Length: 612
Image 1 (cartoon, rainbow, N blue to C red):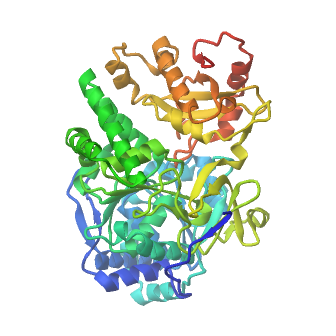
Image 2 (image 1 turned 90 degrees about the vertical axis):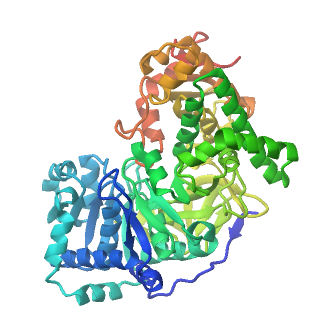
């Protein structure tokens, strides 16, 4: 099979906009909670009904009109994930304008690029520090007229200014917006260069949100459905979930600081979550570390984890043997139930995207009782273009085409996509748009395959395929994912293009390291010392050997080099969605990579030769 199509369950009328989706929710259940918010970080969750939210949107939208925002104007939003982000998003849409998200961690130069390329007239930022970042480049932003700061009363000022604007003016703006109008310009996180402004329409969001209600009722339409957003709303994944939840019957909450995620999950008690694979890895590794206070507890945790994975695999096979069910029941009482409680106690499903999850984690969490629905999509597809469904999960795949969309595998393995969720253009880049969309098909640059049931499996990035000196094609993702599952491994970049063998750059996880060292009877040491410690390197060598079991010998990692520091968003090597900027790593660590291949048979102390 080289093409798979899933018919749409809902067709989107031409008159539809994101604002009409909110109006429909108000008409269905205006007095029922739509969101829950906190006035203080540790305060109670206070319900906001659909009617109350819509009234707040109207109030802020009137303020935007009072500030002179015209239909089609660009308004930047630079903030952490919080109630005000969603409020501003919908208020800008209500005003007929176009919200342009900016990651709150963006540098002044990144802020300049986005605000200048999108010709932003008003920037609403969260903090004075964000305002300072804008101010530092404002002399190069001729279109920018004003900067408003949420934490110093920007929204109250908008509400006050809008009091003199008739509500009918906003109603007129809302009514003028149609399905095919521009809804937002989202700038890609730039893992391969300068961010591209992706133009998404109201119809793009509406198609996915309306069809999601039909195809994912277990998440969006079940009694008491609720989710807590913690991923950045500047990213298309969280943004689409925001629209889908408000379109459905579920309740939305926000938490701006993932450091408080566990207590926030405990108090909000979501029924489903969305996250990137790194979050699931952290949950597993943290649970393992907490259980490792003694040899007995560590053995119990690993037994429970194996039992969870075996139970999930048995479900795929069609039946769970009685003996395994008994073991799973005991594992649930001792370990697995505590993990569910750590996620709030009510989570049954989670949606994972942004990078491959890996079969081990998929089976583990399903065995815990949380079915992870791995999906696939890009900014250009308004997030999901394929997703596993609760009633037919195929772990290791990203599921079938989302309703109304098509997937095609080109002759060279590249994934091509089509459907009403496809972006309309790259902003100000017609040549790049024409290169990316050919005959209605978007060329993703990703490599994959379709199985007999039309489910998509991702095998790597076309531009990331490594060709060794011996002519072997190697997709690095499978090796990176397996090696990254080790508790103290943070990031992995597999290298070896035009080289005699495959190697890898590895970084250590500073948060996980102290507990890991303690449970193994090793002395406390800083990351820079751990990277050269023989016992640490021996553990990493065994982790590499396990990762290599997934590939042929010609594709296996022969050497690793442990770097001095982790890849982070702060040092520029991770995007805000936690993807490694591979091209930048290869450029900045070119000397280190070259040394791997020229160091001879005796590797340097921070490197490990794993040829065996």
